[in-house]
Image (cartoon, rainbow, N blue to C red; front, side, top):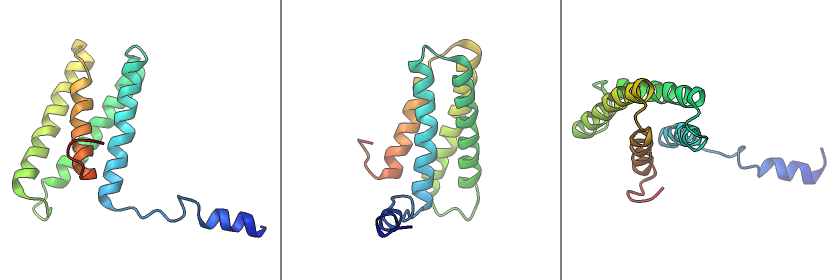
Length: 124
């Protein structure tokens, strides 16, 4: 490998990435939210939408399980709100799949969580 290739590899964005739990959570929400948006933009592509909703439910289940643990360091009020959002996500996901409800509220909730994870409040 020549010097240029070595330098390029050393400064590659992926090679020096520090993965904090918060950044990992943000990326998971961003990936799934993008998939939800794409399925809607593609004329409510039901197979893609169903797969994205399934993964979104799994993400929220993992999150709810984590915040329900007594050792979780988040404030109790925030933990309760996240569990409530997980339940909303579960129920609304069923409505989207069974009744054709809009997936927009699922996208909006995920974006709000991403804003919180990014510490931006009003913007992503």
